[in-house]
Amino acid sequence: METQAISTSPVLTNEMPRAELRRGGKDAPVTTVPHLVQLDGLRAFSVAGVLVFHFLPAVANVLQLGPIAVRLFFVLSGFLITMILLRCKELLEEGGQGVWYTLRQFYTRRFLRIFPAFYLALGLAWALDVRAVRNALAWHASYLSNVYFALCGKWDSATSHLWSLSVEEQFYLFFPLVILLVPRKYLLKTLAGMALVGPLFRLAGALGGSNLLYPFILPFGCLDTLGAGALLALSFETGAGHRLARAGSTVGGPLLTTVVVFDYVGLASVFVSVMLDVAVALVSLWLIVRAAEGFGGLAGRVLEWRPVVYVGTISYGIYLYHLFVRAVLPRAYVEALPEWGGLGPFVIWTACSVAFAAMSWEFFERPLNGLKRFFPYKRAARDERPAPAACASPVDNTL
Image (cartoon, rainbow, N blue to C red; front, side, top):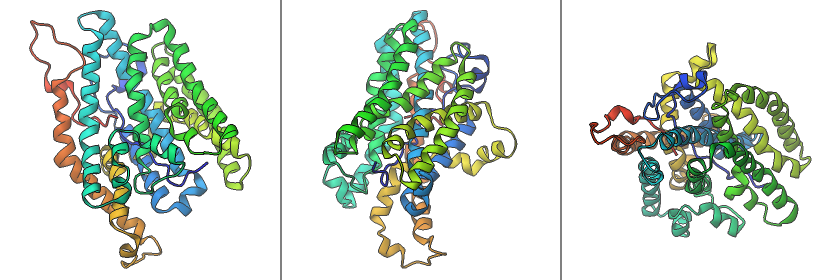
C-alpha cells in the first residue's frame, strides 16, 4: 500500500455537549453547542503526526503516523457529524420542520466552514504556480482529488493531502440522507453494514488489482472508519457507548500493535492494508470517548493546554496549507538555513504552515464561521424571535 503521501483532514465538528455523553444522548437541544476542548487537543496531536509524516517521513514511517492520523480524523468526523444529525433527526420527529429545511441548514453550515478556506488555498496555490494544482485544477476544485489519484494510480506530492477532504465531502453528500431518512429501528443495521463495506472493499482491491491506491482513497474503502464513528454516536442513544469504547480498546490495541509490527518487518502486506483502518478505528472509539468526557491528570492538562487547543482549532488550515508551503518553499532554499541537527526543513515548513493557518483562521475563516448563527438547525416558530448568536459555536471545526 502506498502510504508516503497519505494525509488527513482535521476539520471536524466540535458541537456536542460533554454532559450529553455522560447521560447517553437525547436531552441536549441541537442548538446547544458547547466546545469539547480535549477533542481539539486530539486534533492538534493528529495534525502534528501529519506534519511529521510529510516533513520527516523517515521518522514517521516507522510508526505509521500519517495513516493512523488519517483514520483517527475519519472516526472523529463520523462520530461528531452523526451526533449532530441524530439531534436533527429528533427535530424532524418532533415536527415543526421538514427534511429539506434541515438538510439546507446542515449543508449551509458545512459550506461556510469548509469551502471558503479550501478555495482560498487552491487559489493561492494556483497563483503561486504550484504545478500539481494547475495540472488538475478541475479535479481538485470539484472535490474529486481522490478519484483523480485513483485513475492515475499515483500521487501528486503537493496535492496528495486533498484526497481525504474529497472523501469527507463525498461522504457528506449521502450520509445526512441516511441518518435523516432511514427509520431508527434500521439505523444500527444500516451503519454496521456501511462499516463492513470498508475492509471488504480494501480486501477485494488488494487481492484483485494492480492499482494499489484506489481501494484506500475512494470513499468505499474509508467507510469502516467513518462508520465506526457513526456507530459510536448511535450507541449513546441506547447507553452502549462506553461498552463499545472499552471493547474497541481491548481488541484494537493488540490489533494495532500487530499491524504496525507486521508492516515494519514487511510481513503480510494484505493483512496490514486491510486491518490498519479497522485497528485504528477500534482504538479511536476509546480515545474519542475519553477525550470528550475529559482525560484527567497529565494527559488532560496537555490536551487542554492553550497552545495545543489553538493548534487543534486551526488544524484545518494547517492541513490545507502545509504541502503547498513545502511546494512554494523548496527544499533547496530551506536547506540553506541552519540545519539544527537535520531538522531545519521540518521546523521551517511547520512554522510557516502554522503561521499561515493562524492568519487564515483569524482574518478569514473565523469571521465567515460566525455567519452560521443565521442558520440554526432548529427552525424558529413564527412567534419566536430569531435564534441568538449563541446557537452557533464560533469555534466549530466542522468538516
